[in-house]
Structures are given as C-alpha cells and as structure tokens.
Image 1 (spheres, helix red, strand yellow):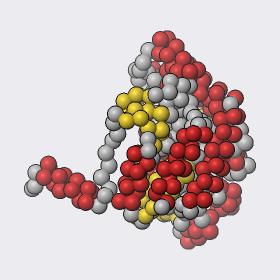
Image 2: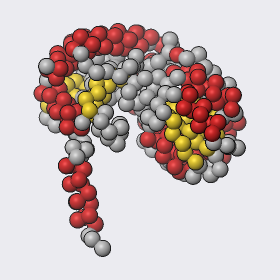
Image 3: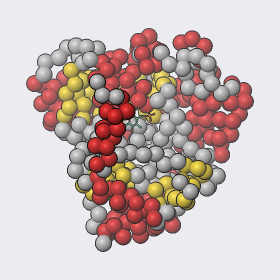
Image 4: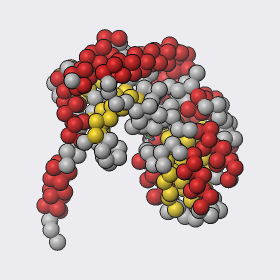
Length: 391
Ligand SMILES: *Cc1c(COP(=O)(O)O)cnc(C)c1O
C-alpha cells in the first residue's frame, strides 16, 4: 500500500493541475469598526465583495454589545448539548423571536445551517423515503439526503415540471422535496409557488432552505416565502441560517409544534452536539431587532443591486438572472475565474473565484455579493475594475 503522504500528494497535484486548488486567505484586521466591509487580507487593503453579511450586521455596535454583555453573564461556552444543560434563556428567547419573525408556531435553534439541513431531511426522510432535490441545491441538502439512506433524485434546476415528472414516475410512501429558497451560487429565487403546489397535490413534504433569503428578500425581510406569499401549509419545513444576513452564527428550523417537538426527540445533529454559545444567541437577538427595524438596509441593497446590474449590462457581462445580493459573473473555465479574481485584487477588491465542484463544470465564476455596508464609491470601483475584464 502506498504511503498516505504520497497518495495524497499525487491527488493534490491533480487538483492543482486542473486549476481547482483551494487556499485560504488570512484576514488580519477589519478596517471599519462598525461594518467590517474593508479588510486587511494578506497584508493588503480590500473591499469585501464576496461575503454573506448582506445587511452589514456582523460588526454592528448593538450586536457586539449584546454579545459582550451575554458573555459576561453566561460565560463563553454553553457547556453541554441542549437536552442536557446547554439550553439557556438566551437560546430559548431567540427561538421564540425567530418563530415570531417568520410567523410560525415554533422554531428550533441549531448550531449551523449544515446541521439544520441534516436535522430537517435526515430525520424526516428515513430509509424508505424518496428525497427530491433541485440540481443546484446547497451541498448540505444533498449530504442530508445521502445520510438518511433515502432514495435521492435530482430534478432540473428551478423546474416544477421536472419535479412533477419525478414525483409521478417514482412511487413513494413518503416524499421530501428540498430546495434552496435563494440559490447560493446563482442568486435566483426558486419557483416556490409552483413547487409548493406540486408537493401539496401529491402529498410530498416541502423543505425550503432560505439561507440567503432570510433577512434580505421580501418586503420586510422575512425571506423567499414572504416574497412568494407562501405559508406553513405550503412549506411545512423552513430552514434559515444566522451566519449570513443576521451577521452572527447558527441556524433554525421553523414549523409546527409537532415538527419541532419531533426534531427535539429525534434529530441527531441537534441532540449529539454542544449548544452554540449563549452569547451568540444574545447577539443574534440584537441582530434580529436591527434587521427587523432597519428597512433602509434592504432599500439600500435594492439600490445597489439595480446600479450593479445596470453597470454590468453596459459592460456586456454575462450575469445570472438574479434580483438578490448574489450577482454571479459566469466566466467558464476555472483559470478564467482565477485570473479575473486576481485582476480585481489588484484594484483592492476581494471577489473569490468559485469553481467546481461548488458549481457545475464550465460555469466557473466570480460570485459577487453586495452588502448594505457597501458605499457608492465601493460599487463604482467594482464596476471600474470589471470594465478592465470586459475589454
Ligand atoms: C451557507 C448555507 C448553508 C450552511 O449554513 P451554515 O450555517 O454556514 O452551516 C446551508 N444552506 C445554504 C443554501 C447555504 O448557503
């Protein structure tokens, strides 16, 4: 048997040769105290155009103050899982406030969105179920289906017809349909009304992962379900994450009393892990208040999105059809995305190159994200740098 280091070394060489090697950039400091949108990375000043802090809350003074105050009172770690001694008043209050925010009877707080999707799908599916998923779903939704041992079928992106075909061709006793609300790499919103209707008509249970819609999409930021006017009867299982627009960390599953109580009894990624720090829950409560109150942050995002799309269209760039802060410039081969990212870096802009397997082969891209914390000057600098790519 070949030595581990040689086998892995050869595998790494292959990844490198395909321009698919990934490396981390070290953020040394944040250069605006209250937004963190400009950073010092690898010794250089850059405007962050590829994070998920859409509302600019990760450095908000009230959110930081809530974190610090709760750490002083509750300590740093929760010390145990929720079912043992880790479930604090801050966690409990956050669950109630998240349920109220999305207008559902209950919400269950989990440590990450990845774990929330494992909980929602693997717990509900079981080995004999059919799990149908959009082809461009987030990796965690796919992994959840693999973990459940259910039969996983993928349908063409954003195609209710393909979903209906799949549900009619495959006999099932129990079927779970899962989709991103806002697709994480393209920024489009799933055709949720048609998907929900298809599920209701055939008795399938719909799970919507609204990691990128929550706080951002919809008239008051309640997410993709608000934008598409759908409720708990259409989408019984709603997943939201807290590490994106809310600027903190964690995730939740919202639904009926029965859904949440069942997950508390059975969800392995909820039961067998340490509760997230109470101070994170406290900071998230503050972020939720700011996100609810500050409609200007969503207005600001809408203005930035409109300006960006108009400017990019003038440059003739190939954008995905997205009205959300996720704006992808499709470039094709990985090498082109890497080169474009490097060009933007010379202009003081940070936009990571997104390549397979995160996106399908031939669709390597710049995944540009906009934040309410971006200034007009930041956006004009971005468009100016993209003009260099277009020529
Ligand atoms: C980021 C993301 C997740 C994972 O959430 P974490 O809290 O970062 O683990 C799940 N689903 C989608 C669609 C995401 O974009």
